[in-house]
Image 1 (cartoon, one colour):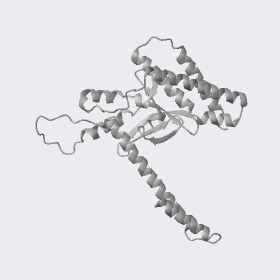
Image 2 (cartoon, one colour):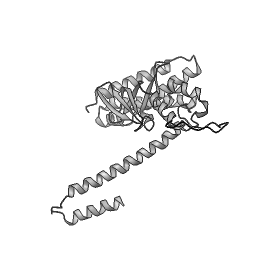
Image 3 (spheres, one colour):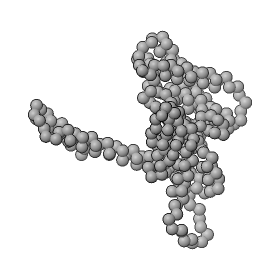
Image 4 (tube, helix red, strand yellow):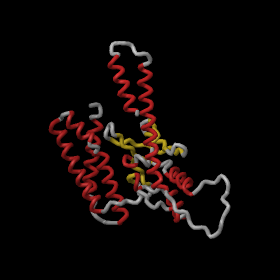
Length: 267
């Protein structure tokens, strides 16, 4: 229906081309406004579906009928609130696709009504972000290890304590627990490092804007950062004593490509 309306509007404009159409600007703005609101409603509904996967709960059987207290949240609502508040005051890295780099910041607060987190960046900037929907571009500081981990690997301490006390509402399909195997994580790290090295060398060799844009648009800083974090997380979990030379090579390459992109941001 919206597409038909737009096509009709365009056709009217063609017919009366060269003439003044009254309130034509308002007509266009109304069409754009309707499209934006429709798109926002769709994305909001999609994020709610994803969020239910984080907060799905199983209600324990009751031995006797109990009259619930008035104005008390149910298990789902309480779990959502605890989940949201658990990330507050944690350091984070947010990947910005426009520049191909991460920006560091602090998760300042959680809005329960909007189900969004406020990110205060170190560069005196802030935004509201859905950590559930955008978890693939978010890194969280793991305070216990003092290192960055992917957002979907993060289980904040308040949330862990809450779930330990109430085992029956552990999310059945939570994406916190890493699903990737050791072999897959290792192969991904090498793959992204080879790809990064190749594109970076192409930039050095050609010194062209095309090569720079190719490197930036590949979002390899994000891919390499996540893969390195997964390797470190896996090694901590397995308490392995393997040499860290490979990780040091990956981190050295990551620092090199970050510095190169930062120096050429104006291009």
